[in-house]
Image 1 (spheres, rainbow, N blue to C red):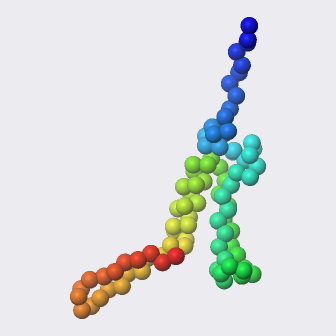
Image 2 (image 1 turned 30 degrees about the vertical axis):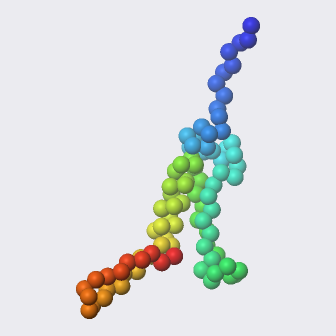
Image 3 (image 1 turned 180 degrees about the vertical axis):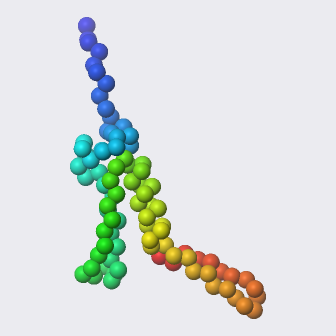
Length: 88
């Protein structure tokens, strides 16, 4: 007769629902890297996000939207209209 096995955590559960998934998967983080001088530049800035996968994904996307996406609005005097666009 087989004995019941104790519950064993699944990778999905550890990545999404554990406060420190890096304890089980050391490379569990998102690195956002910006090269202000463009690709191949000597200078760069980094921001690291660690924690549950769902939270760090949301935090990284929010950070990118806050820091790097800009909106430009051009108002046309003659027609009284405007044009709005996102500039990377």
